[in-house]
Image 1 (tube, one colour):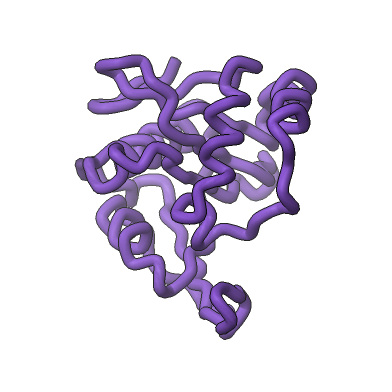
Image 2: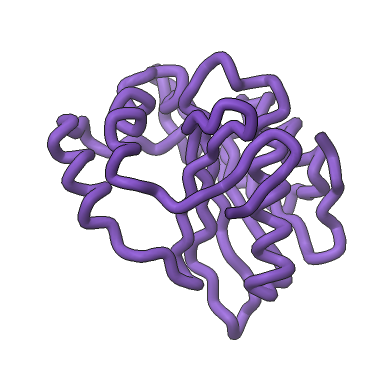
Length: 177
């Protein structure tokens, strides 16, 4: 288990399928994400049961509160390669009452620390939609810096939005809460 101040990160379990399904049905959760086609609860359950094991190149973890041991979201590092020492970060909190309370910040910090310390990564990158100001603020607080922008590359609500490429290097991660 990877433990922070507010959360612990653990492997996904088949029993997480119902929460994942509920989160994916929440329009606020998927607002700034590229969504797959709708999936049934049975399909999500099957996906959880048949999910590949976590590996160096593909690590997905459930975000759980320390206090209640309640699953509230997901974080992942993907595309990790030892040759480049880099990986891509994805994160979302599915439970609305835990957004804005430092849980996402703690989860990202814990996962990045694991990536730098245990996986020996040198850099972690992510894409964030420019209008997703809450996520952008979290990433900046943790030491992520802007590296570039894809103009009008994300479509939502009938209009195009820019995406910002951000990254943090080993040694730049802030111990923010």
